[in-house]
Each structure stands twice: as structure tokens, then as C-alpha cells.
Amino acid sequence: MSEVRRIANQLERSQRGPAWHGPAAGELLTGVDAELAERRLLPGAHNIWELLLHITAWQSAALQVVEGSKLKAAAQAL
Image (tube, rainbow, N blue to C red):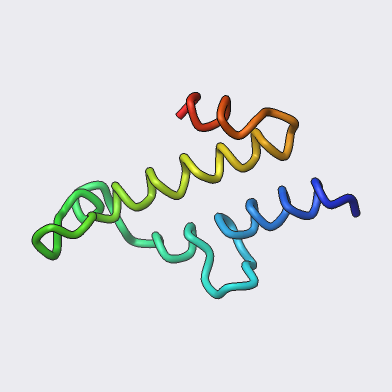
């Protein structure tokens, strides 16, 4: 397996599982609906929705880099 394919596989597994670090994001979100995701459970803390947008944006940037884009261009696409 090439390094590029390995990294892409790890990114995919972090979302769908099985992930090396524990439950994948998709597994953790089982039973979470939009209403819960947008609730701010602690003042000043990010909600689930914001955290998921952050994860998705950086995983998208990482995949673009793996596919050959420059990091600066990938980050600007966010």
C-alpha cells in the first residue's frame, strides 16, 4: 500500500471506523440529531456541529494535499 493510500485510508477510517484511536466520528454521532448538535452545552465551548465542521474541513484539506494540491490552496478552498 502506498503512503498516499495509507493516509487516505486512515482519514476514511477516522470517520467510519474502525479507527486506531477509538470510536470513529460516525460512531460517536449515532443518535445525535441536528437539535442536539447545535446546542451549546457549555458557555463559550464549541457545539457538536462546529466541531464536526472543523474535522470535516481539515480532513478535506488533508485529502486534497494527499491528492497533490498545495496546502495553501487546499486551505483557501475551505
